Length: 233
Image (cartoon, rainbow, N blue to C red; front, side, top):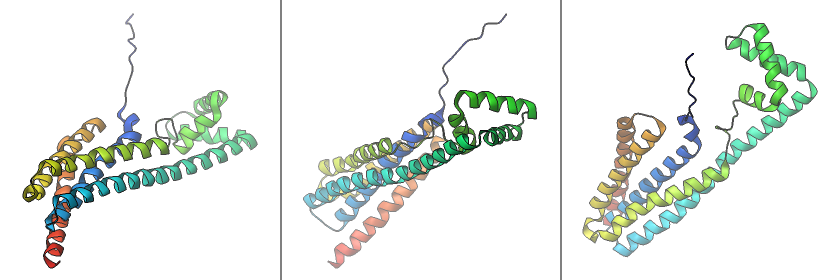
């Protein structure tokens, strides 16, 4: 008789909560801060002015990302909790209807009517609310909203991302800030795109090209605006 080997499975979807916030935060940190720096530097500002603008952009951006993520994910969490409260009430008041509803879900997935009913009964006997949350509402431990985790992850990764173009300002001569920050930031964005794609199981080349293209466009536009306004002023 063949032996059954047990192994621990790890699925990429388990990373979706923190990965989305981390990639978004770092990408926005690099892009927004680099674009701000390039725009200010293109306006013929001093190195100190460029650094002040960059640091201000880092702090404001990190707080904005944290607040935005917290509010957004909290709204999702509130909706989930409201749905769970409604489901809990329905399970208390009309358990037979809920059992039949669950059985119908399994029938639509391919189970025979009698087997679907047995599965629904056994799963609800163990944990009715969790079963209905997963099967009817699509809420599970993997996908549930975590506002604090999302906020902290976004703020931290934004700060790390924003620190990279700021470092380039520190080590660059004033006349070379625009090209050096632009080139380095595009490299950082490409690397981030590749890492995010790799961690999420996506195609690396497509993700890298996508983030690099939009990063280059954003910096080109801000550099152009800085140049025009710098010349006018």
